[in-house]
Length: 306
Image (cartoon, rainbow, N blue to C red; front, side, top):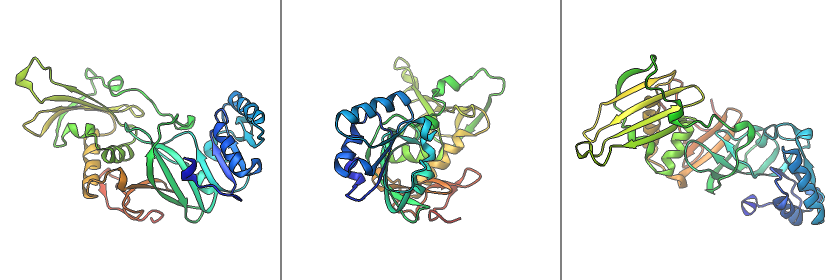
């Protein structure tokens, strides 16, 4: 992560997540104490880091929650050339971090969506309002406190006995949610935020059901859930669902977006962060992967445009 940051002499660096201070010490060693500002929302941990840094001979500026409040909001200490987060942004990368950097600045942060492990982003600030970059590796980190979502599993949300549950059919293959291509899982996690799923295969002692599966999906934050009964013969598939969202339709729309883009793997994906939010794209910022306002596949549009 420090190599990706590429901080050099004369740069000011903002670190989000001091922890015990080890990474902060490395930044001080490379750039000097005066060049480093580090943020730690846990007050006790911030004190531990300050003590550890002092014993190592370093005295950077370390801000705890008394000085900054939520680190997502950034810090009132001017602009920086580099920003390194040692805590994961989930779903959206704070635009305040982009605004905290000079044009040409670099932002390195873990990023997490959906059910896939976290990835590492390296973004370059274009003009103080937008930053673009690619996924450069794996990075499983603790999530920012303000980004922590409802972590209930799909089965903790599903209630098949609910009087509000309705029976229907769908043309969307229920097994799509579990397709283990990381590119697909990133697209699905981004386009259908906070989706959880569980797959139950047919019992091995029932050969007449070979290949069948019950697939559950849910979005805990709004209570929507759906069951899809997969059969090898193909659709339409029997479903039961409840809630404000038709989750199988949302999964199918996300799949269509991924297919239209040529089924990109992680190596083709990148991220733009601007005033409108966090955007996932394939091959370049002009290839944004998105759904329209009705939850249907949308055409790619350059980041930063209306």
